[in-house]
Amino acid sequence: LTNTRNFLVIGLDRRPDGTGPALADTLVVVVLDEQSRHIGLVSVPRDLYVDIPDSATDRINTVYQVAKRTKREPLELLSRVVADTLKLPIEHAVALDLGVFERAVDAVGGVDVDVPCPIRDNFVDSRADGGRRLLDIDEGRRHMDGVTAAMYVRSRHGRSDFHRARRQQAVLFGVQHALAGLGVLKLPELFGAFEASVETDMRRIELLALGRRALGLDPSHLHGLVIGHEHVSGVRTPDGKSVLLPNYEAIDASLAKLFSAPSPGVRPEHAVCEPKDAALGPS
Image (cartoon, rainbow, N blue to C red; front, top):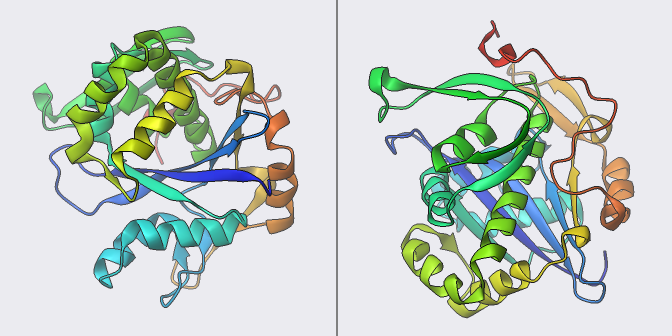
């Protein structure tokens, strides 16, 4: 991946009412190969234990808040940490929270997502009656509105953030397909509606150019890699945190085969679905 352009997409998870700290719980590196026109999505687990420049070693999802606390530029610091971890230079970064994501999915008319395993889960949401919202979705191709898509990418069903990362990739794939259906002339209007809610170091013209690139993408040229069990080992830190230590050789080996990886969100053949209500069981 020596001749690629690499962009970091950051999903900030806040409470539905907008209070509390923003954790970078979704980290996806978009890898563009200009020559072959292939694009890879690389999901980085939020509990990856990384070195943070001029700070303590911690989970990668805390870097955004560390930057805020130490008066540094959050996108710049998080891009640097991801680049050091994957050995991929990050050209630009884009951050948005789940509220913006919900509205964006609704703005494109919802997304079609291939759901490999049925899921029943519920979430704290002050906007819903009783303060909680239910997710109940069966396997197969499902059309999701913004709220449903946001719950789907947040669910801990399967007891693994790696499953969660695959769901995030599948929804991103659905967004790309929905945008392609709307056409390139719709892009400026859509971006204008959300521009104020998106944090980025890119100029408007650069974002629109990337959007047009996504619209013209051949689906067979889109690939997904989740940094998962084969790339990390789970440990507990002296202060009691459960974290994931990266195996850099394994990560490098998988990145080298990124453009032969399956489509984003594809569940491994050997994987078995958890019970539908697994996410509602005791922790």
